[in-house]
Image 1 (tube, rainbow, N blue to C red):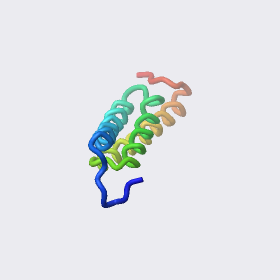
Image 2 (image 1 turned 90 degrees about the horizontal axis):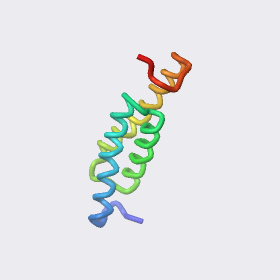
Image 3 (image 1 turned 180 degrees about the horizontal axis):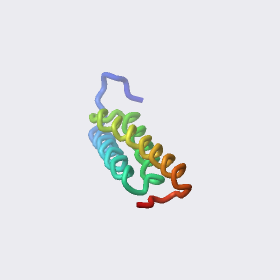
Image 4 (image 1 turned 60 degrees about the horizontal axis):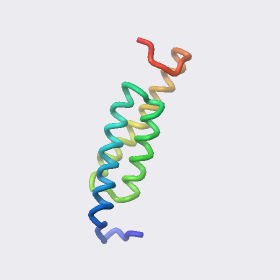
Length: 88
């Protein structure tokens, strides 16, 4: 386990940064399409990135917030239309 003062090995830090960026992208795209799949994926990736000590914690937190927003939009759509899909 890492202590706050030690640096992570480069591959682990790079992987955590990639998870933070992927979380943000999945959360953003999930607002428009496939929020049932992309919302939880964004939440899990953001949590993993924050746990592994990403150098982009803001992006990971934004991905976490967008993931929860995806689920909120899904709940709203389901309650409004009584369906799991968008109807425009």
